[in-house]
Image (cartoon, rainbow, N blue to C red):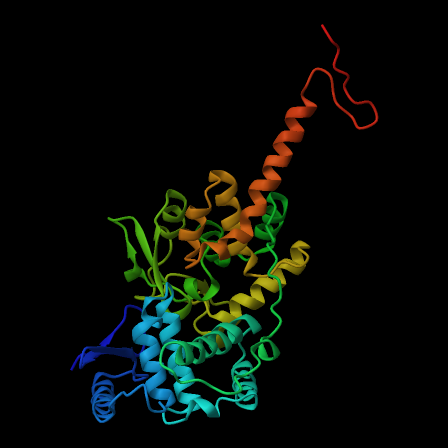
Length: 359
């Protein structure tokens, strides 16, 4: 069997060829035996289907062809693979392309929103791949839809993500109010730019002290390597190894949550509550936990002026996502120009512009 598990993924994937076509994707299974059985059934199904583009193709065949010819070459192909699997599950492998009506798309959008994801995620996991499949079906394989869905009608409005940076004064007040056992994870966030769950999932085995790298598993089970800088090493080295796996722990204060004084792994809800309480105590307004990641990115960009380095640190697949931070270099350039102008021998003002005298 050709099933395998990608690094950081909990489910097994499959990858095989049949009559010159490559078939791959997620089995959705978490154990090898079930994954092998799923792959065998998928092979049998594909072998029983003679792909004839002159005849109507069901959704299962269309998504397979879309993956083989288009999806697997996407920059974020892991996301594409996962989105196609979700659509196959909720539309049905045997569904016809004509059954994908406005009503069906609306139901899919509603179902995805009920999973608690953002509007942007709904658009990228439902609207965009489904529109790509239907477009390819018509342009490449002659499977045209007489009345295609009105995609603009279903595309959700996406909030413009702001970039909130922690100032030096805010940082000092924040750490003065923060309980000491939470200092390491917050300082790590400010230096590494990691997301909350990425830090909570970090285990000692992910740290290569010799190669000076940290392997982080982010959104969509995508992994990236973060350099073990001097500052990050200084944070991690003194941490207790009370747990074989978890890097970041807190000290139990109450006996009901464990032995008093015993280190326990920091959990998501506990970290969120601690952050909110600290912000209130420190007087920080409108500062979310994710803004620690924004702060790390902004500081790196300000120090280097290199967006590509910021993209690599944050693990963005597309530089366009990182471009949100470009305002930093623009603001810094403006401030530098104003400082240089104010240092001139003859200050220039709008009310009294400098006059240039002829020699």
